[in-house]
Length: 301
Picture (cartoon, helix red, strand yellow):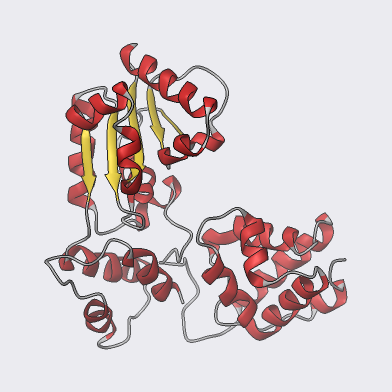
């Protein structure tokens, strides 16, 4: 059962929000990890855990994730969901050390197309990818390690940079019905290798779309690279249209930390930027790719 509407209306602080959210979770008989898994959002455990522990609140860009968490906890009545949303907004408006305004960091939620104005640190890479994509129809294989920022590059970098050019964006598990044409961007393309015939069918459709003149861009996790090489059409893309997403340099990381705060008019504590950069200091010229989600979460928190 969902929580008491009266208790929700009494939420005024972050601690109140965490207490009532935890009460809803406990009534549903779920652990934090189970709730995070039920949302279907990859990497949500740490972010959601902070909400339950009172260490943080959902950011403005996490409205959908909050809704999924509430529904996982058994809150499915529209009126009660609205009370939760109003409580969340009320707590976010409460006085605190940070000025009211947009949330400059995305935590573990990742950047979407609508977050392009907050996407910093990948300007040169975005320009290079745009040039590559507009020069030929592909398929273009965008490859990088888990946590390297491939999805953000495709969603908040490439697609907005193409301006008026229409783009069809999806993942293999969320592929919409209809013909593949124009500019097709498939994120998390490695999902095709965790299925059987549906994955093979999509690979064939994408190859045919590229042959028919569509511009096809595929975001692939590096540990699935060998799988791609077993398919003739993807092998050709690896030879002729591969685009590698490597770790960010120190200057790119600094921009990714400083510029969102500047845009949101949020003051970073003295020495914080240098401290963060030291924590992710590279061993061989650039930081480990997987550190990006951790850094983003630290900034959000």
